[in-house]
Image (cartoon, rainbow, N blue to C red; front, side):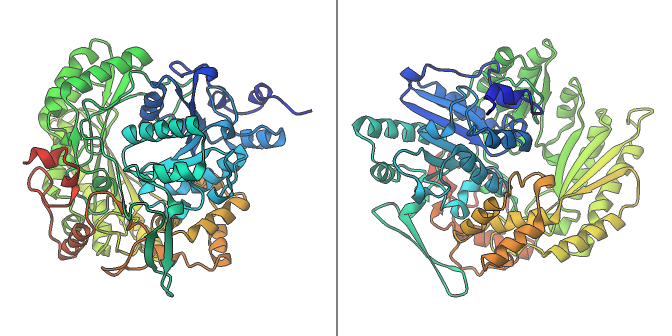
Length: 613
């Protein structure tokens, strides 16, 4: 006899992942709802519940009376096995209704290694994988998020991609669907209407042709849709929707605290960083708005900690004023403020003193490269003297733990740059022991984390090859051998995972067959090392007649047509190419508040682009 869902909860680890019913979760009367949206996060509950974008869109959609957005997460292997064994399809947490009964099934694309999990979730829901196999009775399968800036590897599986920021376009899309539903729903008619919305990409209305050598020849729109699809941008962050409450989980999650978004975008222009280009232009919230939203979240959710969320917190123009305002009540209520994403050149002594009243969790900085030459190549705009001076200030302020993020495999990198990572770590250790104001009786911990560079779309390095696996593994060996002190703790990322990430990040539609075969072989949760089988992935590429090096390790020419060239994020291809050339010349570019570099983002008529004028 098949088990019920409630009986399954007694047989799995962490049943609270699946039960729902958390504080501030939204349950509505189905008879009063016209449009139902299943927001699917293709990873485990603990990861998905930490994601700010899901929190924002969940609250936004549920604020509309006849829309109901529910949460769906990938089940862990124990729960999935029991669900399949007992014929229980993928379900939403709030109603426990099967996902296939919803109008929209929406996925957020945060990381390329989650692609097989998406296909597994669709199958577990009883929804055909390919968009052309789904009829009128099936939900519309849509996606958004940073990886949607190159949606082509997933084009066969999705009806719609939402490009850019989702607050406005999500409501427009759902409102359009409600109108079509009331008038007599026809899927093709709806998709053609949806494709006219700014920020909505319907891949079925675009044909891709290829050269004999495998490069993309052309991307051709059909049926009267726009030739390029421009991302959506929220211009005014003070008036943009932000939730008054977060759903509070019953179990620990990755980031178990409230989050206060302080601005979007980044002024810096680090040439490896996709987020720094696809989220342009920078748009800030006012101190008053951040303060009000932070207080509200702590009151409604009961959190005793909140973080300031952005790509580079110390670039917020009123950070000192903001911290003073937040501390005026956070200290009183014994609420901790977490300030991540600090740039070392933005970490003042005054800021250190103000943070000194809070719990110390250690400081995290990202020099990214071990030598000045390479930092200039990637446009980090950060000198060694600034790094060391910041370390001295932090140690004087009482910190004894520093974490440093670096990358290896960056364009133009040499053995000297690799050794320079540990050399810089040693210099920071020396700063601690040379500091007369260091905390007495305490040692220092300098943690060095080194990831492998992955060339991403819409960056100046989108033309660059990734290092081969052999090159990356040799650099990791050199890195290990160059450590000279036990005070520096070294860790590095798996090169094989980074290699496949590069393949999927710059892939085209032909990778859909690879992903489908991977799913058929049982691949799932590839973002977790215990589930990742690199050799099996390479076997699939061989079966499909595709060489992954073509996507990961090949240098592109200036005029090559990229699989994502019909996507417009505002930043122009000409600007990115110019930045690529400046990188090879070792020339830096000033950040947006120092000088406009005419990247193209001014087309959105908002944020720092307007402020400068």
